[in-house]
Image (cartoon, rainbow, N blue to C red; front, top):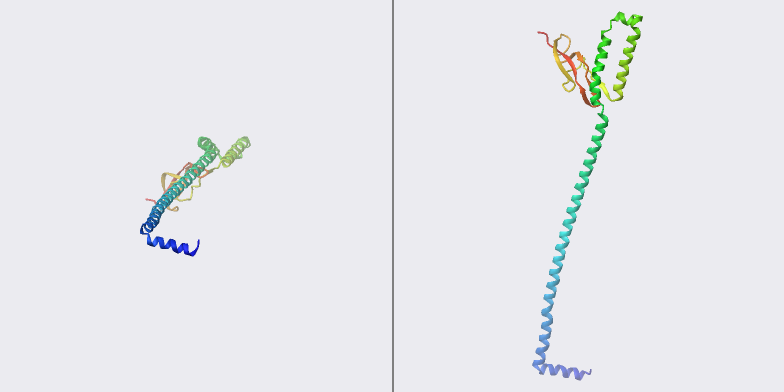
Length: 204
């Protein structure tokens, strides 16, 4: 297009007001559509961000639930393992408690044997047999974690000793065990039977 033609078109537009108005109207229409489009894009972006935030919150909650469930599962497993260990460790509790009376009677029998009978050849075999039986019984107790509770000369321990009587004593401190009436036993770290004892008190 020649310069004369461009000048001529500009001249026509300047000389024709209606033509100029049409151009302005078309430009205005195009510009009016731009804000609406941007607003729609902004609303869509905001909705998308809200949706992402909601999904992230749900994901965090789900992760927390998984952690809680995992912790509960571990606690249940540990509790079951402990119960199983306790069942194995203390399975002999009832039997051991019953067999203690046998041990008591054997001990009384040995204590009742007179000293001269121990030296008598006629009784020596019986005495040796009873003593061997007592040692074997103590060995069996040891294999199953059953141990005798120490008592005489120790302060009264209500967790292991049961005071039956008080005896006046000038030598022992009050509350000290001075006599064992019946032996007490533990099975591992549990009390199987308390020791029945006499404790010292100040003389009247």
